[in-house]
Length: 332
Ligand code: NAD
Ligand code: UD1
Image (cartoon, rainbow, N blue to C red; front, side, top):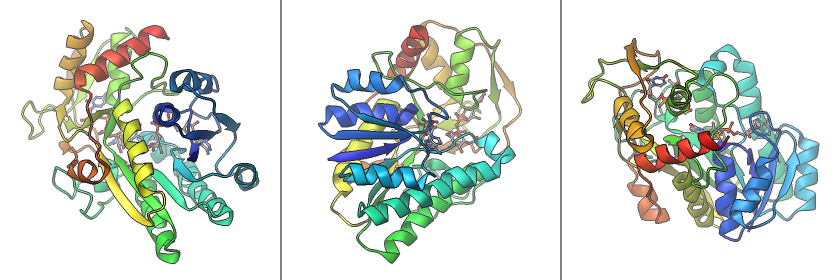
């Protein structure tokens, strides 16, 4: 199949493009390089063993989208492009609604007019909110967002369901990622956040590289075995492979399928820190501080649906995630 990948030079997109090429699919990337670099495209080609087409541009640019669809017979879109920093979304809600929701509307309009109606969308475990109980299952109602970023994911999921209701030909897949971490085992691709990182693994990385004195652990008094927050960390290569399974399953099968992509196992902040030290030999000094607003104690997936329907499950361990991040950091 020929796949348009929006945001394809980003963290998850780049790993997914490698897996698409390895599986023999054609890849066209559209990315405005807001949070990624153009030379990533060449590394994707080298690791995936194939050529791709790269367009530098914005998903809000309807004329550009029309020209891409006119030039290529695209079978499906994997839609990663968007803004993803929770804190920043509170400071810049208009940018988040504009890029994430406005961009998705423009992309869907261009797809509809080009007759391409298959989309895999990057959603997030954040849509479960704080009202549901772990393990989160796809048939649970979505919760209430605590920030504009989370709102955009809930709204886009609804938008895509409404689109299907208006035209039953659409083939939509909502993938709810848990906590993607790790890097390509070659050390050639990884996470390279612009600005100050907020997520745990990029912060552990900064401490490991000596750019920060210690990791501030947000809350030591949760009702969890060691008092720190529990999350479902998933290796980005496992996550990327989940996209290929999802794509191959939905194209030609109208409807809206929802899958959690996680490992199904929770790890506390201190357990992840321990795994990092065991995998790399690098000590991460920690200091327990107050809870971060909006955080919940537990977040992990029920992954049985993806296993049953996609024949997919995460295979890589926390040790793999940490060793691969470290290899990526040392090669930069
Ligand atoms: P990323 O920032 O590394 O990748 C996003 C890519 O989209 C970047 O290359 C960026 O340059 C591009 N982009 C941004 N705005 C664009 C625009 N207007 N037009 C074209 N390209 C644009 O992020 P990621 O971690 O790879 O996340 C990919 C998707 O997965 C996002 O939608 C994100 O919300 C979602 N997601 C990520 C996580 C996570 O923890 N990384 C968790 C859940 C969901
Ligand atoms: C966060 C976002 C979520 C988003 C996800 C992926 C919040 C409230 N939630 O989820 O909406 O989908 O990232 O982008 O921001 N931690 C520390 N110290 C740190 C950083 C994190 O102790 O410096 C802890 C957190 O309290 C949490 C765990 O590490 O228990 C994971 O945090 P993080 O990587 O930010 O992911 P989430 O909170 O799961």
